[in-house]
Length: 40
Image (cartoon, rainbow, N blue to C red):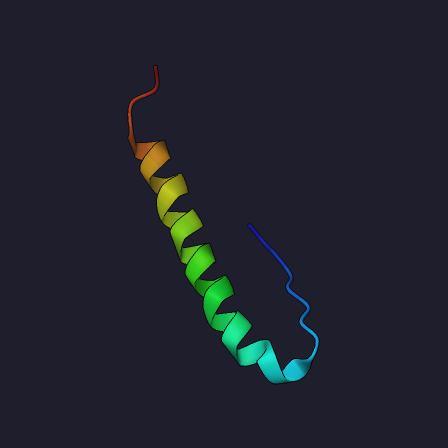
């Protein structure tokens, strides 16, 4: 999965980056967990 986040003003980019990276990690974990669980 590839995503782009554009933030203005640039002064808040570092704070937003942390949140986006955390969200990406959560999505990755959820997708991988769903892939491992048996399908109904």
